[in-house]
Image (cartoon, rainbow, N blue to C red):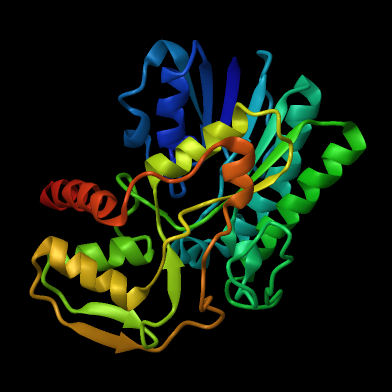
Length: 311
């Protein structure tokens, strides 16, 4: 197949690209404006099967060759990135989604939207099922990301109903692993970098807020399971092993053998208190569930970050 991936040089996009080259004789068109992506993430991929296009999804997209599958992954996805680039984040989720849906319509391609657990906002139920509509502040400091993704889902559903485009939506829960940006403000990278440098470990609030952490290989396996299925629906992809940020920091301190101390700062506005995916739907329909335990995934991530810090 000919496959377009927006955000193709990003964290998850680059890992997905690797797997798509392994699975079959696919040709990839990787489109990225390099706002948060990194060309080094895809430098090792087969040049004869990968075409890199430096382009912003908010601008019209034209691909002459027939496209069979469109993955829309382009967006700032970390607190630091979408706070620094709020308008671009809004446009990637709104105009970018419309542009990529238009491309899928033109080529009669299947369409895959990378959504996020952030569409649930600060949830009032746990675990979060795909049927839950969320609790999101539309005017809050994170709304440029949360509402852009909610709009993206609405646009995808509307195009599917109106133009009979075959669409799939995945709500990705906290994913970590090699190729994350070390300064992206995500909790895993923050804590590991601080621990390795023996700096104070920053905990926001009292550390009781929870997240569910999925290693990138598991997340990508879930994405591929949905891609290869005959299901055109919304699926949570994440690890239901919920833990507090304070518990996560203890695991990271142990694995890094760090001498860092915990310090506490104010919790950011609209920071979700809880995250736990219900993945029953993915288990039953995609025969998928995460396989990498937290300590194994963190060890791989720590080893990679050590090498990056040594450069």
